[in-house]
Amino acid sequence: DIVSFGKMLTGGYLTLAATLTTKKISDAFLGSFSEMKHLFHGHTYTGNPIAASLANENLRLYEKTKLIQKIQKTSQFFKNRISEFNDLELVGDVRHKGMLTGIELVDNKDSKTPIKSEKSINKIVFDEGRKHNIFFRTLGNIIMLVPPLAISQNEVDILIDGTINTIKGISKSLK
Image (cartoon, rainbow, N blue to C red; front, side, top):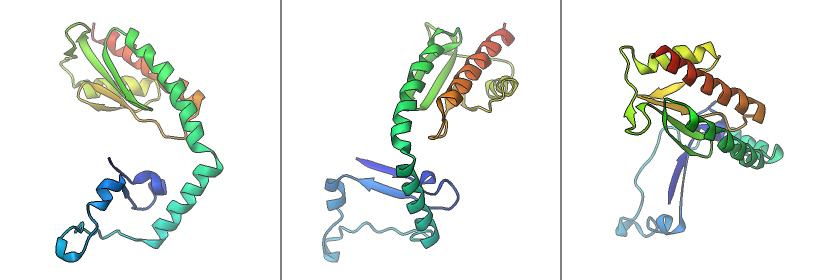
């Protein structure tokens, strides 16, 4: 019902964000001042004309390059590839929406006991990932994959293959 987004509007170059809602939610804030239905808020970065111009150009490029159609195709390819993680010994669960993915590392697939180590699992993932030229973001025992929207299928292959090799390397190092 409510979606907020920002960085993609300007490609991360300038601060600009937007919030979209359903008509029902939007209408709940319409009325006279005496009804107190206004959304009382404001931001110091509101209405920057340079950021707005950059966002317009960015949206024009989305259309020109057919980025949304490309994302839909690449997202399906990505979805097919991430199913390969389920076969790995340390992977307890793979959660994803589009190309946003969380790979849960576990000691035991059946009990889903989070992976444990004397060293920080974040450090282990980071160090092993570097061997495969990938810098991972981890949240505890979860490896996060958040590729750029404009990623190519070849780059998806590199990312997935590198992630698989990283997880296999972690598995070997923990034995």
